[in-house]
Amino acid sequence: MSDKKVNTSKTADKTNNTVQGDFIFGKQNYMLMALGVVVIIIGFFVMSGKDDIFSTTKLTAAPIIILLGFVIEIFAIMKKNND
Image (cartoon, rainbow, N blue to C red; front, side, top):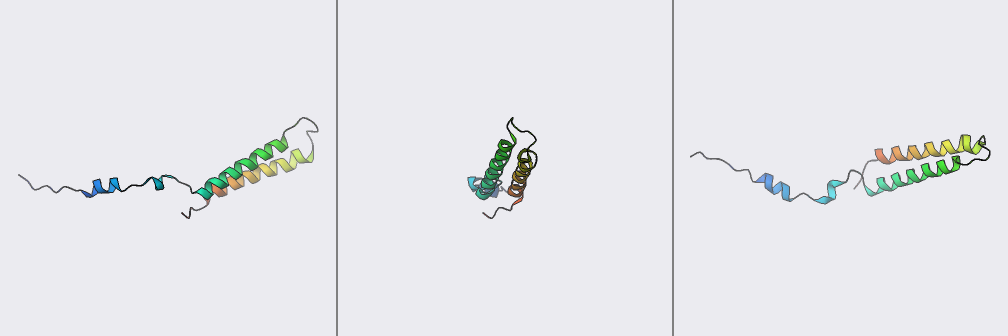
Protein backbone atom coordinates (compact mmCIF):
# COMPACT_ATOMS: atom_id res chain seq x y z
CA MET A 1 0.00 0.00 0.00
CA SER A 2 1.22 3.46 -0.81
CA ASP A 3 1.07 6.46 1.45
CA LYS A 4 -1.25 9.00 -0.14
CA LYS A 5 -1.65 12.41 1.36
CA VAL A 6 -5.15 13.76 1.29
CA ASN A 7 -5.42 17.49 0.76
CA THR A 8 -8.20 18.63 3.07
CA SER A 9 -7.56 22.34 2.53
CA LYS A 10 -9.62 22.35 -0.70
CA THR A 11 -12.74 21.25 1.09
CA ALA A 12 -12.13 23.75 3.88
CA ASP A 13 -11.75 26.59 1.34
CA LYS A 14 -15.05 25.75 -0.32
CA THR A 15 -17.00 26.05 2.91
CA ASN A 16 -15.55 29.49 3.76
CA ASN A 17 -16.87 31.24 0.62
CA THR A 18 -19.29 34.04 1.32
CA VAL A 19 -22.05 35.49 -0.82
CA GLN A 20 -20.84 39.03 -0.09
CA GLY A 21 -18.07 38.91 -2.73
CA ASP A 22 -20.31 37.92 -5.65
CA PHE A 23 -21.05 41.45 -6.93
CA ILE A 24 -18.64 43.12 -9.32
CA PHE A 25 -19.68 46.68 -8.49
CA GLY A 26 -20.43 48.33 -5.19
CA LYS A 27 -23.59 50.13 -4.11
CA GLN A 28 -22.23 53.53 -5.15
CA ASN A 29 -21.44 52.21 -8.64
CA TYR A 30 -24.99 50.94 -9.10
CA MET A 31 -26.41 54.25 -7.87
CA LEU A 32 -24.28 56.14 -10.40
CA MET A 33 -25.39 53.76 -13.15
CA ALA A 34 -29.03 54.39 -12.27
CA LEU A 35 -28.38 58.15 -12.31
CA GLY A 36 -26.79 57.83 -15.76
CA VAL A 37 -29.81 55.94 -17.10
CA VAL A 38 -32.17 58.57 -15.70
CA VAL A 39 -30.13 61.38 -17.33
CA ILE A 40 -30.18 59.54 -20.68
CA ILE A 41 -33.97 59.08 -20.45
CA ILE A 42 -34.40 62.78 -19.62
CA GLY A 43 -32.31 63.63 -22.69
CA PHE A 44 -34.52 61.52 -24.93
CA PHE A 45 -37.66 63.12 -23.47
CA VAL A 46 -36.22 66.57 -24.17
CA MET A 47 -35.47 65.47 -27.74
CA SER A 48 -38.94 64.01 -28.37
CA GLY A 49 -41.92 65.94 -29.67
CA LYS A 50 -43.44 66.94 -32.98
CA ASP A 51 -43.63 70.72 -32.85
CA ASP A 52 -40.60 72.75 -33.92
CA ILE A 53 -38.22 69.90 -34.69
CA PHE A 54 -35.40 72.33 -35.52
CA SER A 55 -35.32 74.04 -32.13
CA THR A 56 -32.05 74.60 -30.31
CA THR A 57 -33.28 72.49 -27.41
CA LYS A 58 -33.77 69.43 -29.58
CA LEU A 59 -30.68 69.88 -31.74
CA THR A 60 -28.16 70.98 -29.12
CA ALA A 61 -29.28 70.61 -25.51
CA ALA A 62 -30.81 67.13 -25.73
CA PRO A 63 -27.76 65.46 -27.33
CA ILE A 64 -25.50 67.12 -24.74
CA ILE A 65 -27.73 65.77 -21.94
CA ILE A 66 -27.62 62.28 -23.48
CA LEU A 67 -23.83 62.40 -23.82
CA LEU A 68 -23.59 63.54 -20.21
CA GLY A 69 -25.61 60.46 -19.23
CA PHE A 70 -23.18 58.22 -21.11
CA VAL A 71 -20.22 59.92 -19.44
CA ILE A 72 -21.84 59.23 -16.05
CA GLU A 73 -22.28 55.57 -17.08
CA ILE A 74 -18.62 55.24 -18.08
CA PHE A 75 -17.53 56.89 -14.82
CA ALA A 76 -19.79 54.50 -12.83
CA ILE A 77 -18.24 51.48 -14.53
CA MET A 78 -14.64 52.67 -14.20
CA LYS A 79 -14.92 53.91 -10.60
CA LYS A 80 -12.98 51.74 -8.19
CA ASN A 81 -15.04 49.96 -5.56
CA ASN A 82 -13.92 50.92 -2.04
CA ASP A 83 -15.98 48.30 -0.19
